[in-house]
Length: 318
Image 1: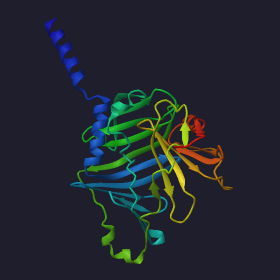
Image 2: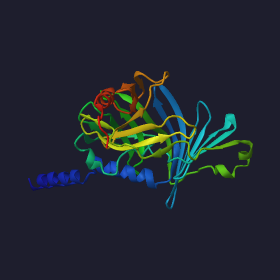
Image 3: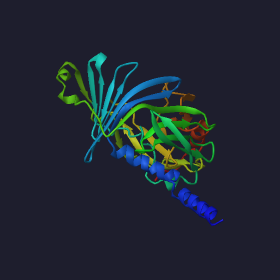
């Protein structure tokens, strides 16, 4: 009897010591930011399969990342904190863009996971084997159909995501990223600017391709009855140096899922109109109170419509 009681207590203590889903996800976020790694992964979206090679190098405070396509049109993207460099060998062209690089790949979660508790559940759902490595599977399940869910297979040794699934409001797979080969502790990134062949390329630089400035009238619109959990997080005006009309951008998020609303002063004949879907991305375009409005994001269509249907132009502006 005493032996049985000891076994029960030991098993309970062991279960308590197991990392929680949030523990795993926090470890994943640290791994993607701090570890050197390289490998090959496949990206499934819109019934298309792309194969990519990635290298992620950390040297002190400096992070560099290289992405190279292995099928389709040859291209390579090298990103760091200051620039995004895209190499297109077939066209002998190099493009250097000083805009802030996207950090979405493998790094999509907010630092504070507790802010998501009202709208998502976190669960450990067993083990898996990806790229010949053992993985812990963690899911982020939305509490309603206003947002997408995620399923991660995390490398037990390092915490890196070996597979990442984006699930729509019906729990169906809409995007998947999965490593087929992964090396941890090494990262070979080509020194693009040291290549002799660079001089045969045509170099383009766009340091100010799109400028963001504060809205001249940030109180121009009311957004009534926002979908549960979504809040206005950012608002600014996009200025195109080539002279196109400025566009107001409003960004809404629940802390994980997000969408953007773009407002233009006049309707253009070629302006996008209606509802569109491309993989995980939903979009809506049309007129609201005489303005051309386009809303787009990786959220269900009902969430997009919930935002634009609540737009009201204020009668008086501050």
